[in-house]
Amino acid sequence: MDQPLRLRTASPADDADRAVLVRLAAGELDALEDLYDRYKTMAYSIAYRITSDATLAEDVVQEAFLGAWRNAGRYVEGRGSVKTWLLSIVHHRAIDAVRRRRPTTELPDVEVPPPAALTLPDVWPEVSAVLDADTVRSALATLSDVQREAIELAYFGGLTQQEIAERTATPLGTVKSRMRLGLLAMRRHLEEAST
Amino acid sequence: MSEPRTYGGLTCDEVREVAGGFVLGALEPADDAAIRAHLAACPDAHEEIAELGGVLPVLAESAPVVEPSAELKGRIMAAAAEDLAARDAEGTPAFPTPDLVPIAFPNAEEREARRSRAPSRGRLLGIAAVIAIVALGGLNLALQTQLGAARSYEDGVAAVIDVAVQPGSLTAILTADGGTGAGLAAVSAFGEVAIAMQALAPTTGDQVYEAWVIGGDGVPVPLGSFKVGRAGTAFFEGVGLPTSGGILLALTLEPGPGATTPTMPIIVKGEATPAAG
Image: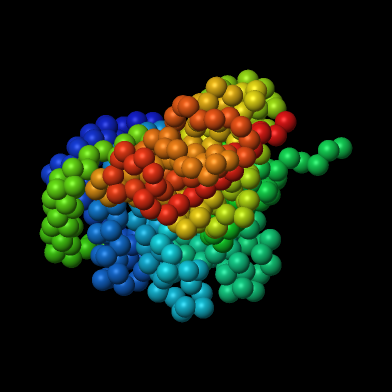
């Protein structure tokens, strides 16, 4: 592997990102422009993958960057890179958008907006700051077809475990296991590749 | 053999079982809230959650690369400029105030720090019990979910517990009464009062939440006021509260600070009673 993986450590890119975030939180518009230029492609790609709709994906990206602009002061060091933080915001908003687009019988309760805290992402100390296409491919290749299906239906499709169980005619317990074991397999693969 | 301990209504094994679904955001809201409540209170670090969550960037990177339209940047910058102008007009600081900084749930380090603050197992159990009461004690789902996500609220709860564990203290669970919001309050034997709130509607302009104590004579006495930001959480401390049981604590949303008698309806309230144990 060209790029050895490692458990996250601060990189120059992280430092630069954090500096942008400080300026963002201070209300500097230039900082938002910098952040956008750096991550627009990543943000739009994930939004489009989830929504399959160019207009909706752009709405999601706009909301996400504005969310970062308004909440930059809430970024918590040690919970992952700025990139992952932003990616989490995009992911949450994109999933929210596709869930709202579903038939009303599947909607939770669109009348009640989520509490403010819920609009914030979960971020995790990620496996590596550097993920090239080969690494991503090889990590995904560790998944069995059924594990990949369960994980992708959740992550890109916004389906709950219960919904996935119903759609794939699989017992709920099996879906839970597929998700957990699939992610664990990817994790182990990335850790092994980093040593 | 004793039953496994539960936090947020779940055992550690139950949390591990759905860890994958949790990090993927694939749980029903009630289940997600229960996990967050568990993680907020459980002394176990639950490293598996961070381990599995750390893989998500790989999934994100697997999305085919697509470029947004050139116009999107202009729209975002225009909206941000508008936002900035509105912010300046309101005099709102760009940085959210520290007490309005929620996070998903405490990480292992934070939980360890929290444990070191708790001098006894009894007190730890007390904290967990009160958090569980707030999480599951008949409050609505949004509140349950918000509980696990708001560190500021957890910090407030910890401060309330610090008061509640003192001998002779009173505690109150504040619940919505004509408004939104819920929280905990404690009153020490010396009249020190601490209130931790979440899910309050944000204040605007000069608006403040005023805390009141209503004794047996039914006359509200002001304790002080505070503002609430977008996160909806708040922590308030005051002194001078009578420490007899049966008093009522309440919040109203007043048009400005300094009210000597409530001018608006009660938003949340709760009766202060002797702390259990």
